[in-house]
Length: 218
Length: 324
Image 1 (cartoon, rainbow over the protein chains, first blue to last red):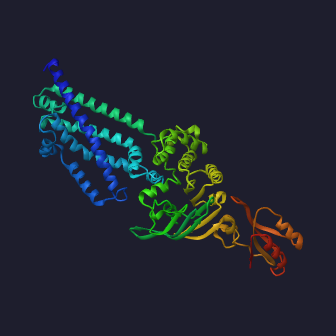
Image 2 (image 1 turned 180 degrees about the horizontal axis):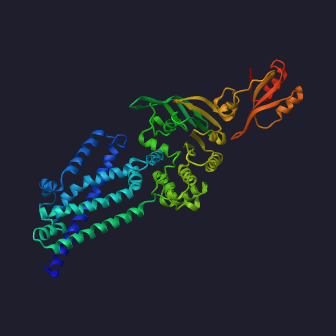
Image 3 (image 1 turned 120 degrees about the vertical axis):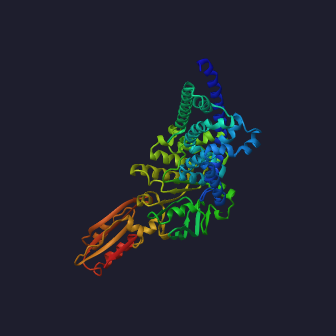
């Protein structure tokens, strides 16, 4: 394959990967934060201790975490159709990516929030802060560096997951590497996609580290 | 200002129930510095956390400035808490906010508009001598400075009561001194009532008007410091005036005399009764309420032969204990 043939393919695949990962990251950030906060609040000794809810939520998260992504991708096809109206294409790939990443990020959120100093939470209660204020101004705010670092890990995991999006016609760099590089023995394409993926991950990690460092005042 | 009646709090643990507070009655008068002294595990931290309902008591009532806290709804309690300041052993500052941001937090909780907040924050930081560190994050501050931020934050709601949870235990002696001096100053200038818990006798000596000694969940001794010192069997007095066991002397009367303030008591007795008073041991302390000391004296002869001298000592000293 010539260079001029390869560039448009790579460009298209890069755009698809970026689109899938970015949208899935945004949705995962929101969903993971909600589930992670719920896991902390409903736990024993939490601000909204509700053990049965906590146990159920934990079970759902663990099921989501234990399914191999490729299985999840296929298993939730009916759900994907209900949400985006189609089961193939880039947008259809975003649904399983998000569903797969939310439990992953939720556990990271949970851990990051548990790291917040208990004394500070007690101090906020002693000052008359409401539950909402404690969650927003203390827990999420104090955990911010950990939340950003965790989101970076999630983005990198999403880049990996997105390689399997080709199964539902999602496209992207991983799909390109499999179809051209692996199945057609186009080594140049394989190398080019791998380089692009490395650059992708590297950029995400650098940006994440930078933001986390900016936010940390410990 | 603070009235605690029949307070009980039991924790259920794996090794059985632990009564952290097992029936405590306490009254803190307006404008005083009241110290609860005890070893770790005595239940004093639980006691303090019950005063602003961070821990719900199992039984008993707590009244702060005339308001029965146990009877309040969640919303009512939040409002009441805004009027009760609290400072903490490990400062409990938000690491993600600057000194000014930390002081601003309670003002935000109270719903003060942004513009007013900035003025009030500056005023509060001024009060604790930290105006020039307003933009610093807690990680950039020393322990003493962090506690000053904690104090400024606790005073944001113009509280009548300040609760102090081992506020100086994580600080070195010099810094402890400056924080205690600040607390005393705020107590006097603002008429702030302070309820503090501590395991350090030094804290009691330096700033407490009244003290309660707590062990195993109960209060074993309580009252104004100068009254407790006047009791020969007071554990507080024994803790402050560290005299060893009395020596055995032939043909001598050994007597412990507790005095408050200045005076020429001993020379007066020596002159009036023409006795050679020997000082065997002694401890003189500068306390919040003035100077106080306990001296161990030896008078030649039996207690019976020194009856007149002992009477004079009893008349002038706050406490006299004759060793048999």
